[in-house]
Image (tube, rainbow, N blue to C red):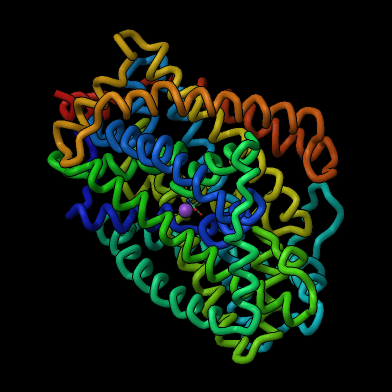
Length: 505
Ligand code: PHE
Ligand code: NA
């Protein structure tokens, strides 16, 4: 008999969980800079186009897949066609890899909450983060552990596994229902505070002054689509997994619209807050906003600490800022970890808790071994570049081309998904949706993928040694592809097959 499948008790629970997954580090530290670099105010146009032609339509696509089959990615793809199963495993593998490094970033942010109180970085935030805290060595791989990182990373995994053990409704949705509203409130306070800093207006001008020339640059459009994919957590298998826990009659497209627009609203809010703060910092240092603007790890762990030291009430601001990173990160981390947990549970017929401890434990161990040494940041950066720029784009291309073009049927299996969406949802999809997921998005993604492969192959990444990018970049993607086919060869337990067939019937 199949282990009991978990459910979200209400549509609201699902929406909170899905927003929890979507709103993450990407909203806070990625969007503001991507927008600034790619046309400022004018970037909002390609961004909106990407949201409407790729983001929301693909959210619908993945919701339909998970909800119709009530299965995680591998089994969901298998029900479309046996040959499509590796797509699901590849996405599951990408989720595994991202979870491994995402946990480390949350751990650093948790440490910086504490460091903010005393502003431990003194007047050298950069030296403090890379040198004193991470104790970075040379690019490569070492097994010299850094205790100040090791222990927090272990704690993050204990918390994440602890939440997941509580189950889909009480754990995932319950946690998101508390921490997403908390995040919004704390973040709003931060944004409002930063708007009153001297120089804030210059920051906002730097972000929003439109440069319309950018609209004719293909790179800008690619950046917009890339941001939407990453930000909505599409093509990591997450939304398939979450939608598989929904009750039979659930308004899918209505939920997708709420999730998509909430994520973008948070992103724009973050842009305002981050650039207001950067405007203050530039004014304090007597430089241009462009000289202090950055994204990612540098923004959060070097620029913001510097800013915290320069502003009145910096300690409070710092604790609140890093708390936001922790809340946003944790709700995303649990969504990523749940993907391999659910997929392997179905494949091997494991019980719920057993799968959580085996898969969560395995991810925790890999994370600890790779991320908490003096070379952790190099490995993290390499895995991030390949998993996000190559892995998910590749997975999305293959998924859309296979489902829409390769598989038997007029427009492949897309009409099945369309009919499923329309059978349960308020907002109906039609030819426009088919054009977005069947044509516009795949064409753009193929272009993006080819560009990215050429860039990595010819320029490498960040002057990293070929050994590092060979193993943790190309090698990691290759290993995931091989594993995807290997796992497909293993037989499914009859109970899992029966469950998904009953769902479709
Ligand atoms: N969507 C998240 C963000 O914007 C990132 C994320 C990526 C979360 C992949 C889960 C999986 O930060
Ligand atoms: Na996001």
